[in-house]
Length: 96
Figure 1 (cartoon, rainbow, N blue to C red):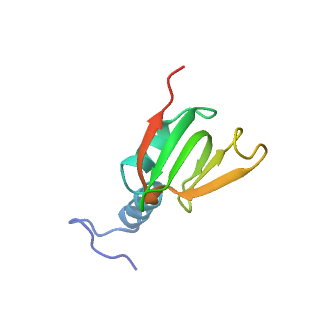
Figure 2 (figure 1 turned 30 degrees about the vertical axis):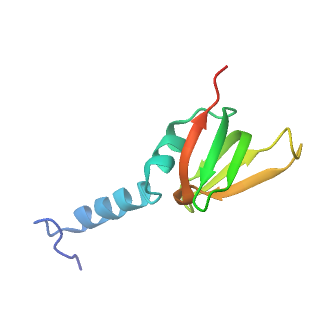
């Protein structure tokens, strides 16, 4: 059974709508930027609530759960910081 959506009534449209929704599950400017950001880029991350993660290295963004992974080679070498990209207010990309 298919549901009418945006004037379309077919299973193919339902599957396409579901795929588009999953593709863009993580919303917001920061999530969009992290999707495009090259891995191993050094950044400062400004979180809601005022916390700042300085000089962390971007590893990856898991688009299924919106987790952004960063390394902190200076403060805690070998550690991984995992942040919900929807909780990021700003990202500063470090200059070379």
